[in-house]
Amino acid sequence: MEGDTIVTARTAGLNGLSQESKPVEDLTNGRSSHKPGLNGLTSEGHGLKDHVNGSSALKSLPISALKQNGLLQSLAAGGEQQPKKEEESAEVQQARQQWEALESIQPALPEDLTPTPLISFNEALQHFQTTDLSELLRNIQPTLRRSGLAAITHFLFGPPRLHRELTEERDLVFAIARCSLDNSQKVHTRVLQTIYKRLTGSRVDCPRYGPHWETVGFQGTDPATDLRGTGFLGLMHTLYLVMDPEMLPLARDIYKLSQHPTQNFPFSVMSFNITRIALHALREEALTRECNRRQQVVGVLNEFYVATFLHLFQLWKSQQKTISDSGFVLKEVETFAKKNPKQILRRLEGFLKERRAGGGVRMSPDTPSHNPSPRNGGPRLGPSGARGKEMNFTGVCELPPEMEGEARLI
Picture 1 (cartoon, helix red, strand yellow):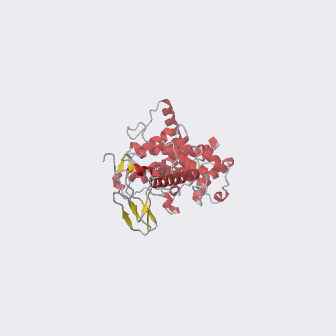
Picture 2 (picture 1 turned 135 degrees about the horizontal axis):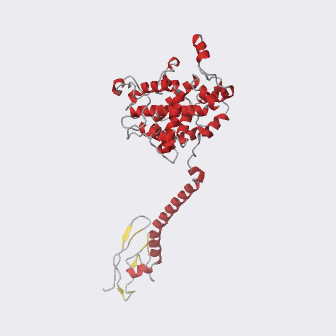
């Protein structure tokens, strides 16, 4: 029959048994012509009701009749909507979890995103001037202890005594040299960050610990371990070198040479060795006459540090020195600097004047030397390979106290 469709419905009673209804009716013009009965019960109306073992079973019905069956529609609707309802519930739960997580996130304040500001040498120095260093001052040795004939000779023919009004400033320098790096002091960490940023050109803060410190010439992941020979004064001198506008180009020249494929050396560790030389010169009163003349100690010591570093830089570059020559180079530089403090300071002044005039004295690892070492004509320190097993980049901080005067890389 056209337009007629027979549906066989399989239903289950309460006892779990299924029943199958055979096709029992034909639809003509949408009406049933036969109403079968089951167990003596007949069904009337648009729905068929069979009671089998107390349960209802749907007989074979046309699709048109099924569409009108309210129970079937509700069951179909319920079957379709239930998974959707569960899906929506899962989505709502996920959204709630995301919202709760979002509420726990603290918004970043603008100051948290701002890098640590650079610190000047004067600001860092003021920190130590206003800090109680009495414990450190008790243990300093500002002058070299002499006895016997050496004391008499020094008194008669040695340099003049430091003016009394400058002793407090001198003692401050030696107290800073005994001060260790303190992570709880914001000034200390700012000094570290400033040195790293000025040498590398970075604008963001770097972690307190990590291999990135080796980039600027520390020997490990913690810069504090390299300060045993000079204390925080080593960082103060490096800070002066990179923050003074006139000294910064020289600092970058030295740093560039320290990255050279064959003439490389740890920049920061070498700088600390220059600080050690400056401390020895101050303790041995080699700088007393210049300090008295200028009526200051810190300024003279800073310039002497830079002048000595410049002397080493020019000698290292012009004579093609390598890391295996480091101990001998430092020894020669120390001897020359302490015997000729006035001359080495004048050479720094001349270097800066020539640079201001046009940069004629600029030296880089890729260009020949225009300003050779004053002792360039003298005997060289020998081939670099001959002492590769003798000299390592370790030194004064690891030596016994009686060998403190020996020139080694810290």
